[in-house]
Image 1 (spheres, rainbow, N blue to C red):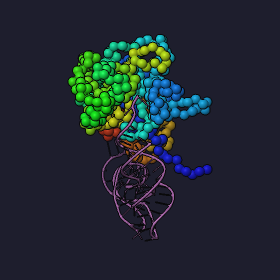
Image 2 (cartoon, rainbow, N blue to C red):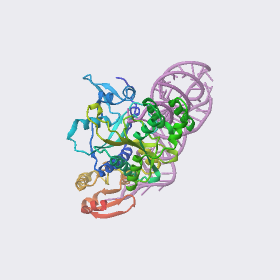
Image 3 (tube, rainbow, N blue to C red):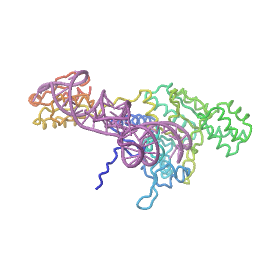
Image 4 (spheres, rainbow, N blue to C red):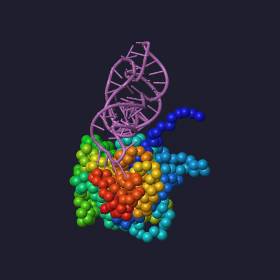
Length: 416
RNA sequence: GCGACUAUAGUUCAGCGGUUAGAACAUCGGUUUGUGGUACCGAGGAUGAGGGUUCGAUUCCCUCUAGUCGCCCCA
């Protein structure tokens, strides 16, 4: 036998969730679920394991070679831990084919894995909400998805000044590029520079634009500086305004990294000057089913990761205070009252209360202290008096009060 | 893949080339044997691994490992 000590650390980049962490996670997921279902989205799920071919077909080589967890199973199959939800979603949608009644609205909250260097707000395992609507050609779909994002932010307690929704239209950008005479390679490079613009100084930006154009950038820079908001964006903004969403702006340089977007794209920005960055976003991607040989399907969706929204909520002091699941803690004076206490606990559980029992038989003050440290709201101590009279003192831990009541009144008193 | 920084108790941090490595918080016990939050007393618990310089290294140097942050990337 070896006596090497096993580290208590979790595997690099993945996270443990202690009860306090899980509580916050459940809060966040609860808000995500509520917002999605409010708009009539149906929950779906898939395995975290997918055939590597699925990603090979859809994504670039770099993703497969460097950024995913891939291994060979005992049967010689190549397997990949899902790095995102969209390929699985596309596979499921394609498999159902014409069975699906359009429009279809689906959402999922699941964990994903990618092999990269962990750093602030980014791990090798992350959880993400995906919400997508299929079968709607018009801007109503974009407006709904952006509206859903907005609703979700509000449900977290964010106010309009906290965040800003930036919108762009890839087709419009392409039109601008075409009018300026850029070929397809130049257009692709230019879109990458647009995407990075926020991180560049104006000088560097202009220099890089010049490099792509291979000469004088003056006309092009002048053109994009004076570009007018396209009609599609005007429509989206107007429809959102009608819904009460007024922190929406046009941003010609918003591209989003993904190549698969085909139309409107949007991102939600944190307006905190100390942390002014993109939190999440989405857009239209009508070519989703290409790799399955299916015809085009209109699709608009967005994804929201748990780590970025957590940091936002933390910075705005919008995270909930931890509360344990137990409503009531039962303390026992002496071993002989245990059966009585267990029966009481079970009765109360059958009535819908979450009840934990202290089996330490330590001094009663100590048992109460344990309940206090655990943050449980109510305590009842069981001893000779209680067993004899069938009457109980319900201690409210925050007010320090105790009220005498009958067993039949305990549940009502706690739930009030 | 590249770069910077860091590594001391469960956690956050001190410390000094030299006797027994300190504190706070947390944990446990006690002051208090039918009732908790304050206060007081006490206890357990640590120098990431290997090598080098030195009479002596937790301290200085090197390697490894791990972590944090940034770049790249971001589905």
